[in-house]
Image 1 (tube, rainbow, N blue to C red):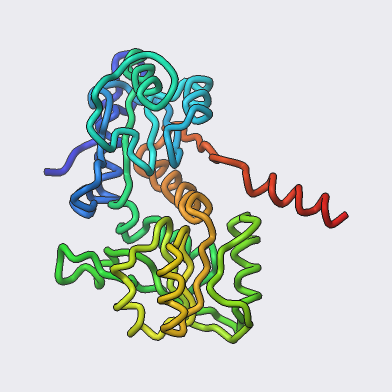
Image 2 (tube, rainbow, N blue to C red):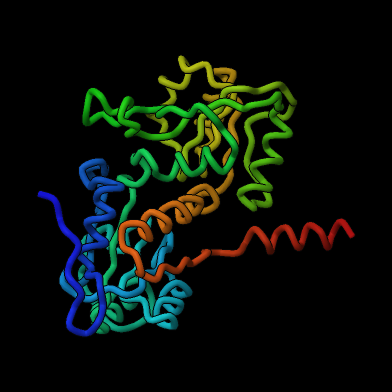
Length: 289
């Protein structure tokens, strides 16, 4: 059933929480989420007025403060604020305390996690675009539908570089475009690369077999376990673990633009997350000087 935008509320607001939920469901269908995941509206009243939303990877204390300072009615996170069963919801420090504050203030919290990872215009698509890959296709098709790859639903994106590049030079591009000061690599010598697969966030070892047959030269992900780095090396595939946060937050500009088109007039703010990259880069520069 198609959800139509709500009429202007009596207090002058145009949108309701349910409108944003419906818009996100069109972008990242909850059916695309993994069975263990917890996505969708986790806290709040679908009928509540919605004027301002904060986008953040996690419901951290700084994100919570920013939401309070700007008067956000809803916080949209990538990683679910409610993931495992809650035994209590009380005031105090920590995540449960922040959830209590939101509930007490009548605010909402929505999560788009593995469904946004698998979405055609989701996390990996944004990562591929940021790194300048072209001709991108789904790397690992979502298993829930036979035509998933054709529809662009699945994990990772595989694309090509428009000009000659090497492992070392492309790693420098990753550092620069993701503003990450360092990466974990499974190689220590240079070689020409052309075909690259990117995965925002965590790399899943179940993808190894498919990648071994994919003829990709390099895999880029947020984090890759040590033994998976070694397995990729055995397949002759260079691998770069560029940081979980750095490879996921690239999705927010496109999500924000999408929501602006769907819900004109909605105020959208972004929590940048940890600034550890700048800190490390600054320390490195000081040492170099």
